[in-house]
Length: 171
Image 1: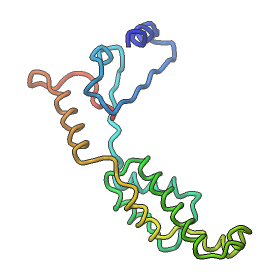
Image 2: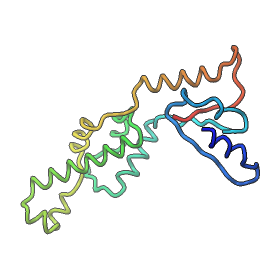
Image 3: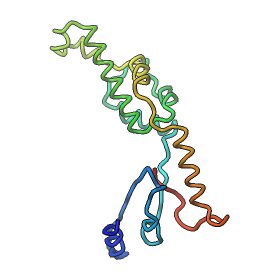
Image 4: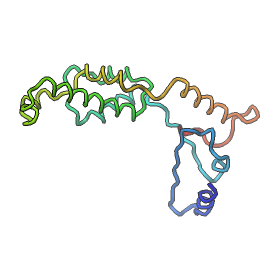
């Protein structure tokens, strides 16, 4: 930490250097890092809401052939508490389940040749996502959301007054 602080203090205002840091444990940050002139902003990156989860699903399914029964809006509703990484893992798991299902359904020579029949069946279905939801669980718990909310509220209070300084934190 001392080396980082020395380097940060040595950076002149017009040097064009931006220091960005992230943590999921703001409660154990060294107070020296939060002194004025070090980090100008603490930014909260909250868990994705339903709209954000839908966008994350769109990104991760962009190159995944989806069956017509897959409804990404419905899936976004079912993924409360999922982080972006959790959603990525969910899509990957659903794709693997679809691949295994298709390989069981089709004769080996059709799969090996990657025939038109194979490519036509190679779609991730709603059932694949439902099975993946049972395997890939959300990593953001209600306890974590409450913890960071309380941390933020306590950080803003100084002697009963709102603290001066950053408005947000990162977790």
